[in-house]
Length: 442
Image 1: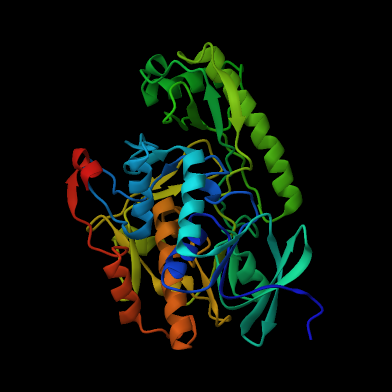
Image 2 (image 1 turned 180 degrees about the vertical axis):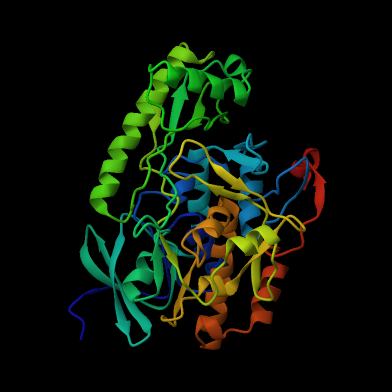
């Protein structure tokens, strides 16, 4: 008999309310599954909200002749944001494909509405520090919150923590970036500037902005950890998003290292804010309006699952019989230097993510979704995009529903049934090229 008091019993526990977890909860709950969505922060969206990122990438392939590669619930969110005049399409300076820039606060509200509409239960301010196993199955997850340490019992679990916390505690095979000489993507503290003269600020080209940074660093006036980076307008005039900072070589599951990274990221944000105010036209009367609630982490643990997605799969545009979604996003590696390494998808311009990349080999009733999927460092640097994480979550929710209804483990579901459901709800489809001007009416 467990010494832990039962907090909740459910069919499906989804751990992590970011892009993947929120979609997994909505997807499964819409199909009648009893779902509990557990999130450590005070809002849904993860990096897309509380980390300060305000743009979805991964919906559209790079280039003027582009394709939408993700549909389903993920694109339903985009359409709902458009309907509320809370989003707009924005070209990407670096060739990652057209992005969907949105109002952060509206997205928080919208995601909550959709989870509640679907019938899922939501639990904030809750971490999962341990799991209780029954041989190769997760019997329960322990939840730590204001009530203390309590038990949530679930027949199926989706790990959408980003850091593969549940998979790690359940004994799944993982690879941790940033240790034993393994490469790891840098962390970034997003910040926002207020009272910006947008017309003057964005009359500068990216090349001109980059030269300002180079000159400022050469002159020794500022310590800039990244040359280039991104500033862009938001749905609110004079309120500008900045993704410029770079905190290198951090093992972000080490709590002391993560604490130091938070401190360093905020320090860098203030340095860049002063650079913009003093050196960049249009920012003369601006001020640092806010830094994100917590630092943006791109990569920590990655699952070593039934299939490991590779750089070769991405670049070659490989397709799979058990595909759950498409991706046209380039490999975007925020390495320890001052620029970003890019590598683009060849072939038809997109590849597919296989269902097997969500399945651990050692834990039977667990599905992993989001940036901690089973992929190499290079492949993860493409597949971690917002739209793909949402699509992975949606597919994981459908897979969990099938497994629960058929009383089988997620690895034993009929793939034809999964793919048929994903095709029916427009999650998985063949991208069709079109002009960027046509996207809004897609």
